[in-house]
Structure formats: C-alpha cells, structure tokens
Amino acid sequence: MSGEILSDERKLALEDICETCGLPESKIITYIEEGVVEVQGGDVELWRFSELSVVRIQKAVRLEKDLRLNPAGAALALELMSQIEELKTELNRLQQLSE
Amino acid sequence: MEYKDYYALLGVEKSATQDEIKRAYRKLARKYHPDLNKEETAEIKFKEIGEANEVLSDPEKRAAYDQVGQAYTPGQDFRPPPGWDAGFEFSDRPGTEGAGEQDFSDFFESLFGDSYHQQRAERAKTRFHARGQDHHAKVLIDLEDAINGAKRTIVLKVPELTEDGHLVVKDRKLEVAIPKGVREGQHIRLKGQGAPGLGDGGTGDLYIEITFKSHPVYHVEGADLYLDLPVSPWEAALGGKVKVPTPGGVVDLNIPEGSKQGRKLRLKERGLPAKPSGDLYVTLQIALPPADTPEAKKLYQSMAREFDFDPRKNLMKNARQGDQARAGS
Image (cartoon, rainbow over all chains, first blue to last red; front, side, top):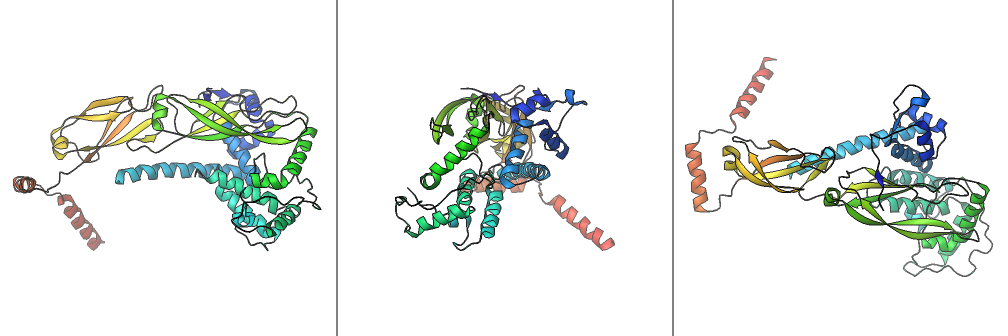
C-alpha cells in the first residue's frame, strides 16, 4: 500500500483543512490567530494552507486534549518543540564533528 | 497476565489523595506525551500512565482496584478473582482527563473492560455520524530505505464495534511502501486507513511519520548528506583523487591542492534522491600516520628539520596582542 508524502507545495483551502482535520472553521481561525499555522491569501475564500499545516493542527489538537492546554499553550509547545528539534540537529552535527 | 501497579506507575503512595494523583498524572503526561517526547518508549509510557490515571482518578474504579490489589502478591501471575467487581458501580465519566480513544492493557481490560466499553459504545451510539479518527504511527527506517525506497510492515491497534455493541481491539497489519527520497520528519498519508467512522461518517486517515535510524557514515540534514572523509597529510597538501562512498556508489573525488583540515567539498546532487536531489557534503579530516616504527620516526624527524613550520605562530601573536590590549585599557 502506498500513500502520499505531505508536501509544502500542495495547498489547501480552509474548507479542505476543516474536512481533513475534522474541525470547525472557528477552531482553524483560532489556530491561525495563535500562530499554530500560517495562511496565505487575503480573503477567507482565497486562504491557502500548506499541506503540512494538517500535521501541526493535529498535534495541537492532541496537546490540547491530552494536556488540557488552550490553543495559545499548544502553539507555545509547538514553537518550543521546533526550537528543540533545531538544537538537537545542531548538537548531533557538532557531536559527529568532534568524534 | 501481569499485574499492573498503577500507584507505582504514577509514582504516588497508595494513600495518595485524589489531588496528588491528579498532579502526578499531569506532570508525567507532559513529560511523556509522544508529541513532546521523541523517545521511542514515550508512547508506551504515556499509555501506561493514562491507564493508571483512568483507574486511580475515578474513586469507584480506584476502590475496586485497591480491593483486587489486596489479594495479590507481587510476582504472581494475575487473574481477577471471580465476581471481584460485585458491589461496584462504574458510572460513566466522560470528563475523565486524558482518556481518549486508546487501547488499554489486558490487565485493565480484564478488570474494567466490559463496563468501560459498553459505556463507550452507548455513548458512541448517541452521536449520530462522525468521521473516524485519524491514526498516527511512527516508522523508523534505515537511510538506505529512503535512498532506494522500501516496504515496511506496521501493526496498528484498531478498535472495532461488535454486533452486540462491544468494542474489541484488533491488530491490523499494513504493508506500507516507503517512497524513494522520503526525508526525516515527513508524513505519509494513507487515505481511509484510520479508524472507521460512526454512522455515515467517513473513515479516518493514517498518518505515518518518518524517522531515520542513525547511520554509521552519513549524517542527514533535509535532503543533504554529510560525510567526514579521512585524508592523509600529503593528500591534503598535494591534492589528488580519492574514493568516496555515496548513496549511488563509490565516486572519485578531487582533493584540491593545499586543502586544510575541515575543508568542505560539495558533491552536487549526490545526497538523497529528490527533485532536485540533495547534495553530499564531504568534510576533510586530516589523519596523521602513527610514528610507531624507527622508519616512521625518521620521516617525522626529517620533516621537522626540513620544514620551517610553526603551527603556533598566530596563536602567540594573538595572545600578545590580547595582553597589550588589556594593558592599554
């Protein structure tokens, strides 16, 4: 069985994001306001999301539910996670160099 | 069956108050949440503490569990005593923290399984149509799998609703194609492979997150690969062709004359396959031949005589400048 790799190049409309994540528009808008996901385009009808937003939104939903966070808290956790990931990559690189 | 010490899992005393249990669970949940903790064991641990909390945070279940625990001696194979749950009512508590659609251990199922699932099934029936949950799985692959593409079998736990309204958890095996050129951290979506929906709700999707095992030779960043290439002092100084492994096979690499330690050379599009492919960065690591024979020692001694070479020239100069600067301030 083969699937598709989620890509930054394929874009989704608000409707598609709601459908894929099983969430109402209002929740997606909250996530945009909190910076969980970014959106391109001016009017709501023209909004386009990267397909990778799906993964971030699903993570935010799990964090909210499992750890009783609010959307701002979930956004902060995601931000710190990506900082940790960057630092880990850098640390790995430095460790390999020093070996 | 293994007896589960829920108190030990949450790290609390048997006499802990409900508040202490709540605090212990929340702290551990933050620590082991699989989205926050990338350790492979985090997910298992998160499920275990979720199960412990499911029981201990509910005074009714906790009382029943405590009664079972009294009859149990550590190390014993566990069987629930017959009729052990007589006299306990398990009321539905939809607000229980952290209890999502998760699969609990056999131990939990043997104690609370039936009543728990009946409640969930009842609750599910009252919701008319809902799309099935999306499932998530992490797959650890070798770098070679990303370079060549591969097939991996993953096992999913799938809750299914039986005709009489019970939920049973079944193993489902899926053979998944790992596409050539996939990168670490990318997600593969398998449409319709998540949980079945309720009513007319569609089936959820399955998302697979790709992680790489560490590789003895290459270090991966995105689609680019990094490799430390040992070279001899004369190869670095005089230049020359040396053999370098790449994912596509061994290639000849031209070392430029006068290369220094740590010099980076780029082999264009010799990284992970993609459109365009990543690059392979080769970092030169100058290796010194050991002076472990009289002949080798002689060679080093003749180099010491012949070269007018002071590797600490700049170091001494900079140190003096630093001294002067401090004296002047």
